[in-house]
Every structure is written in C-alpha cells, then in structure tokens.
Image (tube, rainbow, N blue to C red):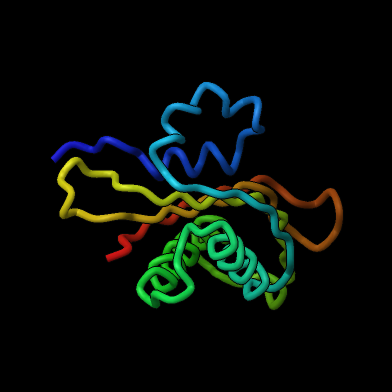
Length: 146
C-alpha cells in the first residue's frame, strides 16, 4: 500500500508556517480536515484541553464518538513527548510552553479499509518561566481513529 496523503508532514507544516508560507501546499490541504491554534501554559492539562476543544469546535472529531476523542488524546500525548523530550510535565518541572498546534485528519493510505488517521503537531518554545530563556521545540503524534 502506498501513502497518498502525509498527514504528519502537513500537520508539521501547518503548525510551523504562516498562512502565506502554507500557500504552496493548498492543494494537499484540500484532501484533509485540519485546524490550527495556539496554546501556552505551565499546565499540560490546559495544553491538552486547548487542542481537544479546537478539534471539536472545528469538527475534526465528533464529540459523540469516544474512539475519536481517544485517538486524538493519544496523538496529543505522543506529540507532547517530542515537545517535552520524553518527560511530559511543565509547571511541576519549572517549564512553560508557548505553542502553535495543528490537527490534521485524513486517510493516508490508498486502501479504503485502512481508515482515517489523526495527526497533532506542536511548534513553539519551551523553557524556564522567564521571558527570553526558552528555546524552540517541535512534537508530532499520529494515531489511527479506528
């Protein structure tokens, strides 16, 4: 089976590029459902909630189907592992994040029975809760919806 849509790559581009910079990718974006947003906090619960709320408000996942929320949750956690370098925690470790995020839902395989998948990407900064002491970070998580 060959990949036809690279939802992870699209999620990383959406999270890290400006709308003008995304213009060359507009054709690929027509084949997926996506949204983007921003979040910043010392609380990982707030980061997770921001992504979940955005996914539901933009109809990327259904509020009525647990499997969709569950798939999104695992994609978020996987992406946060990249942002946090494997140790998911911020405030309790004296770290804070300022992130842009993207959520992409699509069918990355040509075979219809492979189903839909969801990707979450974060791009932004992480560091001590002192302005100017943060550095860039990136995270990507992908999970099947079911």
